[in-house]
Length: 161
Image (cartoon, rainbow, N blue to C red; front, side):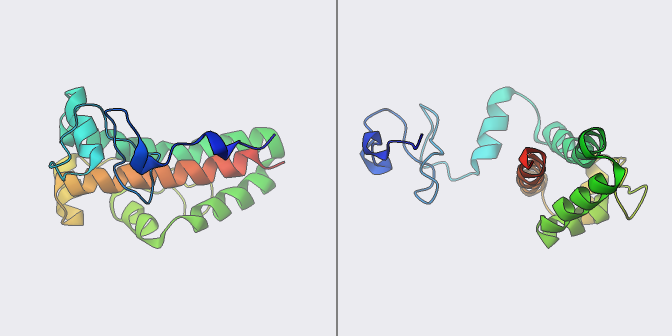
């Protein structure tokens, strides 16, 4: 059954206290009470509300990213066997933006160049920032996006028949 788009309210006509963060992605709504004059990335504002420090959150996202290829590997081996898992994991990794793959090689430890990669996050935040040359805030936003990109590719692979 297709979605009935006639019931959608255009993003610029929403009458709630929420407004789109970005009209290119109108499904991303500003939280109620968010100050539109605060131009920081929404990830930073969301993390701030949790009370977790930027540094702690950065380490969490990097660690989460390092776990995902192994999760995909285990699921594919269980479902399809090692040969199929190897192919799917390599394709999934290959579809990530080159910037993400380079950053992973820069700060994560790889047990292997081939699937399963055996990624681990062994650096602490100051070491990550030293290697990347970015601020903690920029690095947090980057790894949030990297995790999301890998997560999206992983779920696409798992949902294929």
